[in-house]
Length: 233
Image 1 (spheres, rainbow, N blue to C red):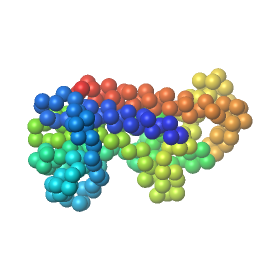
Image 2 (image 1 turned 30 degrees about the vertical axis):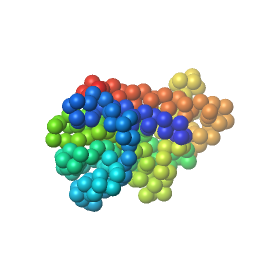
Image 3 (image 1 turned 180 degrees about the vertical axis):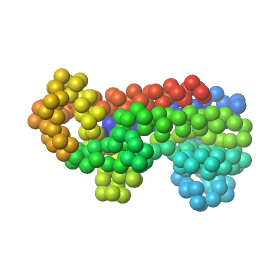
């Protein structure tokens, strides 16, 4: 899945940032226009006291992983006390195999542990529901959650020798079969996983494949935005 997905990531981030400033007087993220985002990444183990340290040195926001709600909740409370913006990170580096979700297949035929990027179940359970939950929590007077960053880096995949991004994906049965149906190419002679990329090229339709998948990802991203806006415009 080429870098054309990056605008989708940015759209998700900007849309999510618009969802959840917790100052009652702000109905949209005016702080971004006023201050710009001057943020740094921080790990949970670095300690919540670092919020005050970074504010003192000119940052106005910190970014940290939101995958552990009980930990992120404490960070959100401390960010509110410190007067700092907090941006939570949700990502695609997830063991979809263990969760029984559809797995991504890369162009070389490697079936990864990470989720297929068009898997609706993954988006619903791992992206949409957690983001909506954070949007609601960001309305609390005692917490500060200013936005969500969607991280597409596939750490779980790269640790096993695979790609770090969806730059050449996905060729799973669902993605590949959906494209065949879209192009009326039939399904009887579906090639093995490792031969699908070449098969598309031989058929002269390889240039259409990723745009077909990108359209699906954009639709899922739009669904995510709509779910967030229903809770917090």
